[in-house]
Image 1: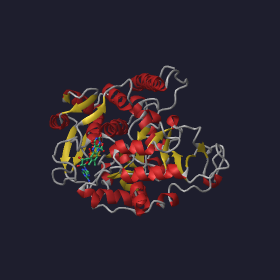
Image 2: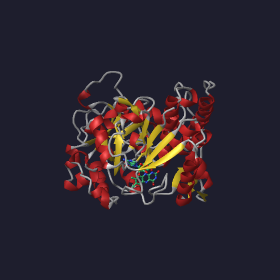
Image 3: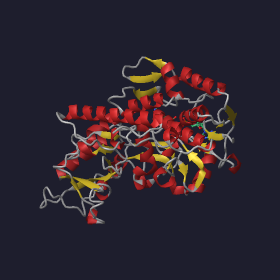
Image 4: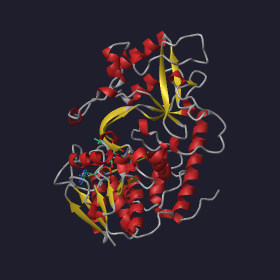
Length: 458
Ligand code: FAD
């Protein structure tokens, strides 16, 4: 059979190669290092960790990334097996010795009889003769390949920066202060009644908020990020506020076209608008609020917004160099480019964020590509996992669940999972823990069923 060609031996490409080869497919893994480097990689090893050495929480019962670890272990993940082997003491987190980890992944891939590693840059779209391809070139995809992808997808569908507005869990928003409404009630049908929600501020609250934004410490750009052109269209809120105290009131905080049903006779001085971020309606992003405020300060500042006093964040705002596709509009349910299905994508370039999430997308892409190479149907353990699993929730999010207009890279979190049928009882913290445990237990049952190729037990 023809081999699967995988471009990029990072977190996603290494896992994809392992999964495809373990399924019985031949693999050619193309890696440009050491011939060509990136701004962040330092070695020529596979699965090099470019920054922190942590895979984050390892607790499957209470944390969505811990759950993803466990599902990956059950699916025979190379990244998790080598992560566990090279583990360092780190409390509840899984931290690894980065050199030993990368060496172990490289050794396993090099020693696999079905995997060939080819060192060299793929400096344009992969040749058509390669057939079944996975592109896993990551957030720092080489310019020649990135330009070729942009030419194929349309430049606006491939981003070079993520400008992330904070994303809030809906169930942590105080709806006795906030309300659902689209500006000027545009398109207010029942289906999009919950498209936007609004948080009002009076003048004193607005002034306190602007003071806090101006005082908050920010994360500086890295030297190499400074060289990528910055864009007026998505300035951080602290940059806007520094241009003038009123600037935000004429931008993302403009108080027009909205009426607060809780106080219909009082005109708000400013309004923060949140937009539904996923089809489930469990996540809302704060519109136009991309920011480089440091995480601790950012949480404090955002909780000054009336209605968000107790907000829980699915992700905080940030701006980084990051190459990623507008996957909800471009990719099909098995991560193939709809416009050119021979090309499958995996890893951070699909719009997931993080080492583990990237490897998990590699795990899925490797299985899908292997099934295709071996002429098997894309179902059972070689098809998309159920949406109740962490893998399925991430896949569903990037391939359609997320809003394509505001799509930004996403870590795995329980807000991406289908809600539970029953609501947990008790105090708020206890309810949150019970919900995580129930979602996690449901996910592992569904994961086992997926891997065994049977329908999940009810
Ligand atoms: P990568 O692991 O980057 O792998 C892509 C591979 O493709 C690389 O080996 C690259 O050399 C190769 N490649 C690129 N272009 C070509 C080409 N044209 N031909 C052949 N090979 C090519 N996530 C975290 O969880 N924790 C962190 O601390 C963290 N820090 C980060 C810091 C920075 C500076 C960046 C940019 C990202 C960070 N991330 C972090 C996010 C992300 O999870 C990692 O970048 C992760 O490695 C992504 O996995 P990937 O497989 O998609 O890409």
